[in-house]
Image 1 (cartoon, rainbow, N blue to C red):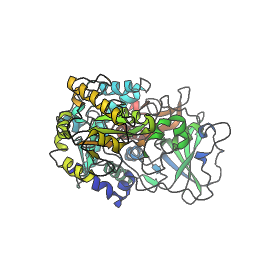
Image 2: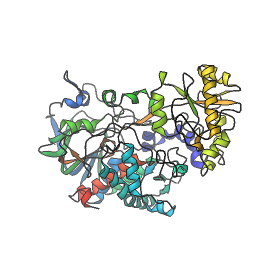
Image 3: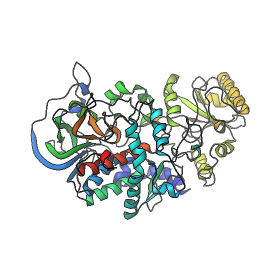
Length: 553
């Protein structure tokens, strides 16, 4: 298939333009000028940065007045800007990197026209329940249901907007690795709904940079102003008096105050590049092989800090790290644990977890293994197992030539080990030969019995390691984002610890708390970007109309 076959070349050559470069980690946030005090990193002897508000910035060089001020130009901020400006609000977007940013492929919604035309019917109550229960029922059910019940209409509008800009919104074909089309009828523990769509240009590439361009173009056409290389430092006002603006450090080192008569929308992203926050809130995530967020260093929890300093509460939910089992250098190899379920072993040669390509299960388990290293092992009958595990969609891997092409490309690399015997494979991996042989024997026996007595992997995803040659790929962990943010209500309005909404302050995207908890859920592929866009549109429109989203249904 064209999209799958060209993905690696696309990754290699993606530095060509703006949003695409940002999406793949090829751009960076503007560096702080020498002598600038990074207030976001300040701590005191009494605790962490979020417990120690800096002194108010008073040397304001210029003041500007707007209806709505948005901090952050990812897809959430862009969606909010587009909706706000389209509904007549004078809008400005503050972004600390040199350009707007978008990343990823899948965007999740429930009930869009594109889904219905594909014969896909998803009950928004089921989607909400699966996500809510994944988070041990800590997330805000009403917040999740807002996405599940209202995203369809939002995406119908986005489909029209995309068409007007020369793009198509299409139902995901499963080649991204996260939109698992064969999993919709599995037991609830593993069920994956067909929520994902993607935005495709004339080049045939599905990428969220397309969505970012669409939203930014419409926002600009409707009068939105963008200020790049500018960093939100402090909110104007507090929880008691309400929020009326943002103090921003500009590229020239000066400070400006952007007043907002209708409201401030924080869309500043997650905490994955803030080492202090990660150590405190999500230490396991630091064991990932790489921080793959792009642009590097921009997701430092800026909005969380500004909100807390103004009296907002942190989310009731624990962080929900999105860690996927690939690296950019092997993303295009469809036999890794990102796509396939193989026997997974740690450095002791022991099976350590349910080996499904169900991101949090396998990645979280690997990061908890001794030595933090593991491999997936399969045999020469891998084509048979691809067909067995992907009965509806194996053609995207096999018939397209993707598998054959990539197998030869990765053969002999550090991403694909090969040996004629298990002993030879064990020696290459540095695992105990006897332990690996014992693990393989037990695993093969469970395949023959048709039941995984250890970890409960469904029979469809069990394999054997029996026919030489034998292969292994490393189980890698890439940290994409770590959603954790501010406590919000069902209107995405930021709240205090007493659950009181703070007038004039809203949080969307990965700084919106109370939507995910513990780990990123994969029941609804693309839900992270989907909630960014949905709440961006809903909050932007509601603020422009001087109301809240629960009153615009």
